[in-house]
Length: 362
Image 1: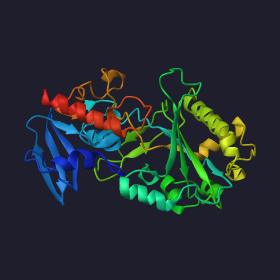
Image 2: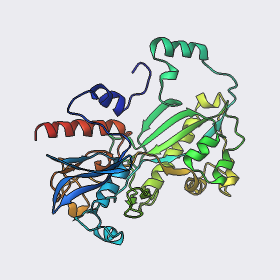
Image 3: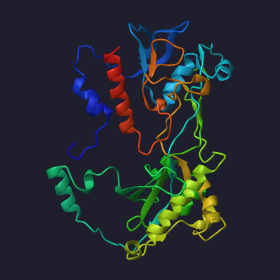
Image 4: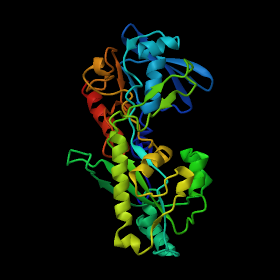
């Protein structure tokens, strides 16, 4: 809005904070959903060191996200029976909570040098555009110059792209970037020394991933972070690996175009820091390199998967109700059953809108 990024808080919550039927508590942690038999009664939460128990007149709706929603359900006795028993938690309902973790893959480190030595656009003009109209380069998301969605041969359905390419400028030697991505030293060393004023990077994101990970409790302590295993590139048929390889082929084709040749774009990773194969045009090189430069992409879904069959690993039904537990729903990215063709924030907003319609008609 006017060149500033919006989120669910600014777009949906702030305008209605003064409603009499809405109470928002910050600095509060829900530690358990109270369930008697198979019926949800309320929640227990802690605020400023004081524990409170709140009863629900109608139902409890959990919207804690793909990580914390399964954590809360498992702490409350809803989850894989063997796992809960191993943590000393009485089992209320044996469901595949925390399973089927799915996320987009991110391939980092595709950094390219160029012969560009000065900005193409005037920074002063871009500042004037942003301050005057809320538009222009400075109103774009993060540093992205362009975003491409593309379907590679492995994607059989012609209606859906299976990779995203994001073209960005870069400070390739930034300690912040290294820490944010938690790169191993050999990876950060491989991009050290690249001139950030004339370099750029292409983020490759495979979308419809097949690998599945887990979210599991570290203990029965609600203040302990759960154990998250994205299990990237693990599907036995190598669908995700082959998607990455096809995406990398596309990246190299783009770099070989006349437009990029004009600026002398060159792949600038120090290859020998990562692999002993120096030819970056070979599949052998990339199969080795992607083990170092591929990670999850913070778009996790499916840990409380929506579907009709709890026997098949589904946790909530089409109305977002937890299978076998009354008066309890989950409404967030954790219910999305499959990795999607897009980023997930707009899908989460849709889930919230759909839930609102369901609740109003209940």
